[in-house]
Length: 192
Length: 192
DNA sequence: ACCGATCCCAACCGTTCAGTTGCATATTCT
DNA sequence: AGAATATGCAACTGAACGGTTGGGATCGGT
Image (cartoon, rainbow over all chains, first blue to last red; front, side, top):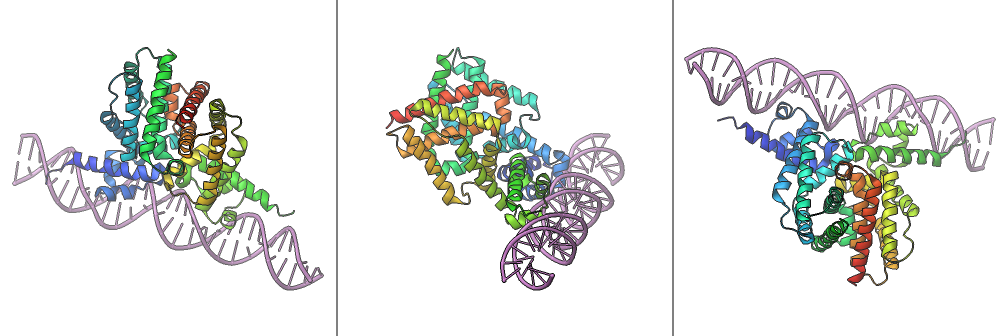
């Protein structure tokens, strides 16, 4: 049998995504990740270096994937609303990345590793937002993006609140989030 | 020396709040909590039953405290904006509860323990919101409350995003959040 | 067909963790 | 004062954890 190292790597990454998303950095178990992947755990240390570095790789991977899956298309506040709604849909369907971001923010604070690529990645999103809302300032675009991500990720991070306040109905929430995003975008544009 | 059990309890609760807020449920160390409190860890098991129950007690305690500290006063969308701004200020100043809520939501999902008191607590907040915005539906009030809490807690839960998108400036964020909350409140009111 | 490099895995290691126990000390009741 | 109860703590325990090691299998190159 040929060594399909890329496949092993992928399996580990997927298993780690599930495990870290469920249990966080401290709660995840290296043994469990290896078992989920059907791989010996020693591979983790060879491929990624350790638990924390594997976590980083997982976040990076997820970030990349969601950016490709949910693009910001069109122009004007309505397009921004559509983007927010699509993002929420994605999170309802696959909450892993939203949860990972929260675990990361809670455990590591503001100093994230791999700042460079990450920063570039975020600048890309801000640029897309400024393309959709011509004339908006960079600061306003940042605020708007933070608003959108916070609002959408909240669904995955505070399920207990979502359940209590909305009965866990994602449809109702999507429309609320869409209107909020449209309003926030229009507001940011008007302030330009 | 007289047995000041209440003081010991309080010290444990405070130490546990700090520890759980920093490290989460899985990352917190019982030994560290005891050391922070200057108390033997065996007391934790006598007073609270165990790590998880202590966590519950900490969340409950924090929830109660913040509700008392940040009331919703006045009427109309502006009052709601003021409430959101005050909540964000509180979170910037003392992010413990926001972080605890996130750890809880991530680790435990929608099924929170102590549902009854918790639910009553939330119904109180919704009632306060409906008093401030006469005519609003219960569903709209729930959406609005979820929006406000999500937006404000986001500052503490996603510090890496806050840093990247806003440069970590809480003042700019407060004004954005205030305007968003006012807009959301007016919108919810208009839909009535 | 051989060799060096790469990959895989079972077993192992030192540490750390949540939770317990046994006993000394302080308090309250009578 | 003395018995009964509640509180304090150091030391312990069994399990689980992240990480390592040594040896065997499989590859590509020649």
